[in-house]
Each structure stands twice: as structure tokens, then as C-alpha cells.
Length: 148
Image (cartoon, rainbow, N blue to C red):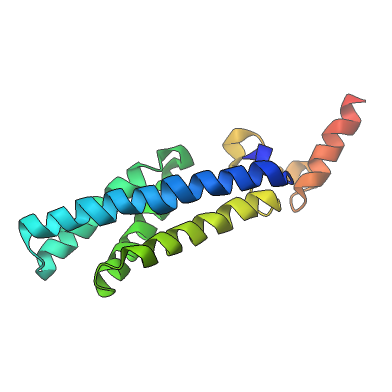
């Protein structure tokens, strides 16, 4: 997500895409259709709802495999929490779309304002050896100075 950092036009495009695909798309497909079909088929007793939440939050975590295992676990946990809220709010899908969209908006804005950066595996996160563990911009500037 380095291309989002400080780039307002790219950030706006990403926000629109994320709201359409994740906020709206995932919620309509997973909670709006699949989770409701599961309840129609298996009923709405506590055991059925627990299995429903377990299955679909696991699938939700799997869909976020590009974020690594930690991202998958966070997505699955968040998905389970959102599923519980979904059933507590009597299947209020629009509320879930808004919550999901705002949650993802915070993530995109974190990249835009450089509050969040990809994992060390991507080679972007500053290393403590460079002395700039708390300032990603310092490492970028340091790299530019070395190139000159």
C-alpha cells in the first residue's frame, strides 16, 4: 500500500473500491445471503448460529490471506464479532455495511497518513538497526541520501 501514502487521488480511488467491494460486496454476499441461507436451512437455535458464525468468520479470515496469518486471524476474529452484532441487531445489514466500510476506511487512512506500513517481510518497515525504528520517513530519506 506504499502507493497510497500521501497520495490523495489514489487514496480516494482505494476508498471507493474498498467501500464497494468489502464494505458493500462482502457484507451483501456473506452476511446478507450466505449467513441468512444457513439460518433458513439449519434454523436459528444457538448451536446453529454458533456454527454459522464459526464457518463464515473462518471463511472471512481465509479471504484475507494476502494479509498473512496475523491478518487472517484478525479478520476472522473481527468477522466473528461482526456476525454476533449482526444477529444481535436482528440481521441489520446496512449497519454492518457501514461498520465494515468505516473499519476499512480507518485502515486506508492509516496508510495514507503513514501510520501503518506493511510487514517487515515486504522490506518496507523500518528496522531498528538503522536507528529509525519510529520514523519510516527517516529511512526513506536515508536511502535517498545513499543513492546520491
